[in-house]
Image 1: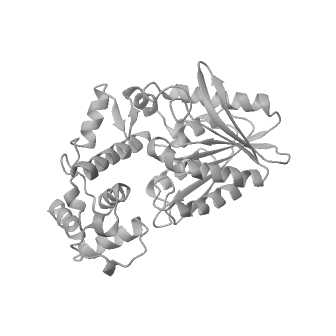
Image 2: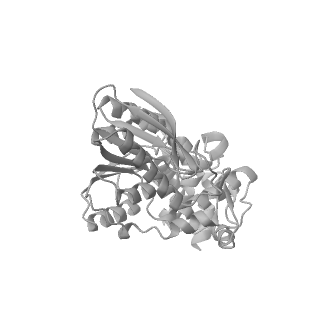
Image 3: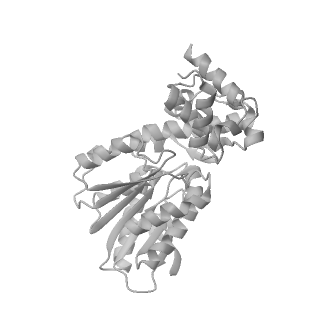
Length: 268
Length: 83
């Protein structure tokens, strides 16, 4: 596998990208979308190992940091969703210029599903989309992230310093930035994501979709079932893979990541 | 709610945290953090588990570590929320 690390221009920003190319001829590029916050750090190894598997199957891949995340320019304090949409488009333009005649597939972990599905509306030729425990309801996701903040405070100080999730939401409403594990969550970012509605997406290319969930019960969660219904309603052919193993983005047990890598790479 | 809430909580813990142990291996009074290596990620799973299994909503000021220190404390908390 040939690995290239480079910055890709997007407006006045520079996006850090890792491009993994197979040794032999290839006609497909998998664009990977990372999760946010702590989940981003914990899923990095998954992306690295998956890239190797894909290269062995003669598929190229690219993992890039959204602006304000990782090594890309900007800060989370300035990040808004429209910039991230532009980031995705810049990556596609770069790939089309430098690697002509390729088909695309998308792979998204957790929050990455939101920019990935947005991109899917216009990306052609688009073959497949693999979504790993995708976040498609930003309100629920925000609640979960804020609750985690309270739990971390509780573990550190014996009880949470902040009164409740609602009080954190009220702070956001009042224009205050919330610190999530050293990453700034701004009212502007939340506002720019609040309107995301999966059912309003128009994906014309009709790619195949695989929904992967890792749960304790090994069955699709209520949120997963809801998403499946939405995708079916949109006429998108969706297959499901439920893995009874610890979610790698929570790092209960990093050894379990192999199961997901194999399932994902084999399907893509 | 089952009469044996403590057993239910142990089963939930083992399932959600992928622990390789049996319910009998967890003692009701033992400290989950010190004796069983429960960390903040695990406690978050327990919070979600309590919400899903018992419909519990954490009210302002209820994120207290004491409620998650042991199976007994968790059971007492769940019972107090069910009253």
